[in-house]
Length: 520
Image (tube, rainbow, N blue to C red; front, side, top):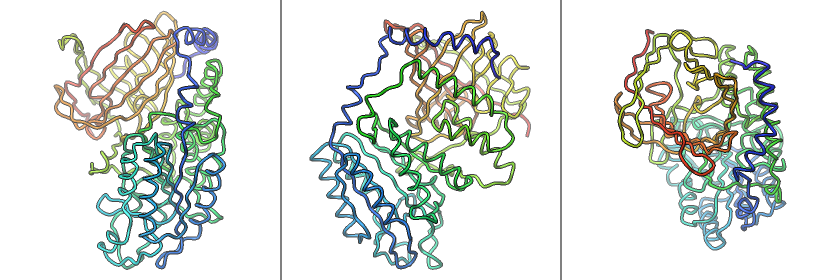
C-alpha cells in the first residue's frame, strides 16, 4: 500500500534531520574497525579441472586462471592448481590450511570443475576420476568437508569458499547419483560459502571462454566499494537474468566482518544523506514496478538494486510472474536437515479463513498480558487482509497496516525462503496515526534453527535476528522464530529497543496460541 505524496515529502524533509540525529547518537561508522580485516594477509587457493575422461569441460581452466589473475591484483598470494589429481588436490587443501594457520589472514578458495552430491556429502572431482559406482565416488572424489575442516582448524580471520561446480552429471549412463548439483551446506563460523547455482540444481558451463557464473563474478569483483556479499548478490541477479531464471546462484554466510576485494575502498562509506537518497530512489522504483505483470520491470529493479531494501519481495514477485508464464524457475529444494545443514524451508500461501491466535507476554515476568486473533478475510495479488482490513500484511506476513492506524512502506523482515546463513537488509517508514513519520533500518540474518515450544505446540523453527536503528537514534532489535512449513508468519516475535542512553524503552514477546487453517 503506497503512501501518499504528503508522506513522501515528509520523508525527504526529514532526511537531513535523520543524518544529524544518527551522528548525535554516535552511530558513526568506524573505518578503523573495517580496516582490521582488510590489512590482514590474503591467501587464495584456485583450482580448475576440465580434462575429465568421462565428461570433459571447456571452461574451468580459463575460469581458474582469470580468477587467480584478478585476486593477485587485489593483494592475494595465490596458489593455482590446474588439472590436479586427487592426491594433488588433497595436498593443496592441507597446505592451504597450514598457510592460513601460520598467517591468520583471509582465505579464499575457488573451484571450477565437476562437483556432485552423494548422501548429503559434496565431492569435488579431480582430473583422474574414473567413476562407475557409488564407492568409486567416495574413494576417488575429494570431500568438501576436508577443506572446511582445514579452514576451521586454521582459526584465521575469515574464509570465502566459491564453488562453480554443478555443471552436469559427469557419470553419464554408468551411474546416476540420484540428486543433481551440490547438497546444501551451512557456512561454518567466519565463513561464506557460494555456489554457482542453488543446491540441487545444475549450472551452465557457458558458451564463451568462461562459465556463466565466473564471467559475471569476474565483472562484479572489479566493482569498487562492495562487500563480498554485495558482489555475490550482484552476480546472482546477473546470472538469473542471463539464464532466463534457469540458474540462480546461492550463498550461506556467517561472516562477522566485512571483506572488500578492491583494496582501499573499505574506508569510503556513503554519508547518511546519500543513504537516504538511495533509499528514496529504491522505494520509488519499487513502487513503480511492484504491480508489474511482466518480468522486465522487476528484472530492471533487481539490476539496479540487487541488494535493495525490496529485493526479496522483487525476487518472489519475479518467480510468480515467470511461473504464470510457464518459464523455468530455480528454487532450493526443501531439504530435510543433514549433518552439514539445517535445510531450507519456503513459505506457503495464505488462505481465506486462516486464523492465527496470539498472546502477548511480559518478558520480565512471563505473565500473559493480552490475547488477540487475526483471521484472513481477503487476499489480493500482493496483500493479505485480516479482520476485514483492520490489519494488512504482504504475502510473507510483514504488517503494512495495523489496527491502531500505523502504516508502513513495504519491507522485508519475513521473506520467501529461509536457510541458515541467509542475509538481507530492509528499511521502511512508519507513519503514525497523527501523521508523524519514523524511519527504521535493519540488517537481517537467519542465525539458527532450533526447537521452540509455545501454546500452539512445539516447532522446528528458524531464528531470524534483525538489528538496526531508527530516525531518533534508537537501537532496534527484533528476533523472530518461523516455521514456514507449518504456519505462515511467526511463531514467536520478540523485540527489545534501546534509546541513545542504552535504556530499554520498548520490549515485548508475542507467541502463537493456535493456528486454524482456512478451507482449501
